[in-house]
Image (cartoon, rainbow, N blue to C red; front, side):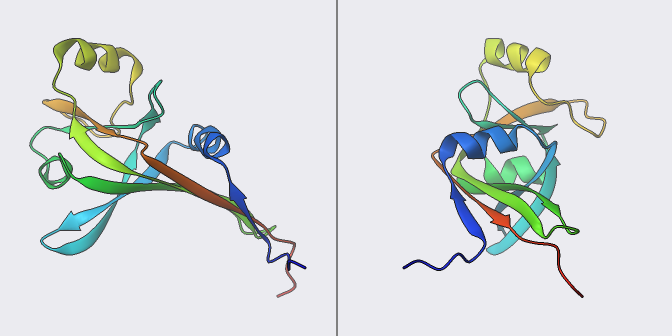
Length: 140
């Protein structure tokens, strides 16, 4: 007999569907040998990779280009104590191909801050995991 602990594991397709609904997530990476988390706006590409748009000279680009990172996004409702969290883990790379950069300039995410030398960073969706909490209205 399995106990219902209020959590439900989400499959890859459901995770990607939920990711497409929210505009902001968090990149988890290593900075100066310590864990770092940075909120960023993003979009999903047609191959399910996570796309970020940022300044070419940013510390984020220097820290994550070519390394494995995690990307997390979520949505929760405190009133019902329910929501979901999805984590994408994969290698981050700066998009360098001119045609791909041009395509993403039209279809990719738009930075929420002004950038003059913007680049796109792709996080491959090598591993996608998620879970949903199906809470109930609490009595505090």
